[in-house]
Length: 173
Image (cartoon, rainbow, N blue to C red):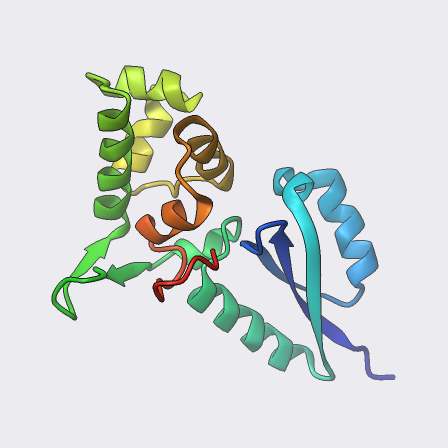
């Protein structure tokens, strides 16, 4: 008997994509996320597409992760580069450059003098801030939400600045 495989996308209440995954049982997988995934508490709904062949589902899942860069899929960040919006097409930044600029914006917003102060504001350790600055670790979804809460910047604006969503001039997140 052929088992159906699902590729699912989890969204928050604002429609931001939190996570993309693959499973043979959406119900079972959502229960697992509820128990073990910190981002689950922010999930409002999910959609699922069914596939009759697992390898086709896996290919589709990888494509969604690479193109949509969900907040909580680690593999979507492995080789991310983005074209600067409004600048010369083809000019690209590395994850480290994108994250450094973003963290420097937060530091400037709060008039912080060093990474230690930034770590306190972000509720993180100084080594984590350093890893973010150097691109050795992606800025977590929790940190994105925290940034939204402490600065008032929209999630859509934060995602755009971090290259996590394509910008089309709308406010769709």
